[in-house]
Image (cartoon, rainbow, N blue to C red; front, top):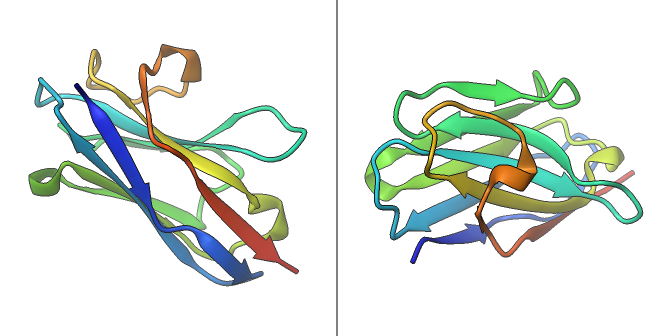
Length: 125
């Protein structure tokens, strides 16, 4: 069984930084992608970033470009999302998700079968 365990998140003032981690286990292939999504109260789920765990390819939504950095530790099967220059509008529950059927990043959330438990990120003004 593939599992994702998220850590990180918390409360930070605007302009601050946080790092999220997403550790995968039970993945049956070497080529897969991990993406980050977020959902704020009353808003639809939106994509944030993606990283290919096999070739290092990555993607960022425009709203986080230049502020967020996605990375991975292949040996640990873990992806990270370093969030800097945080804004109140970044407040949301952040989820990581894994697609082990592809090696190329995408942000189609309904095609991800495995999800982390979610972690709250709150940015105060």
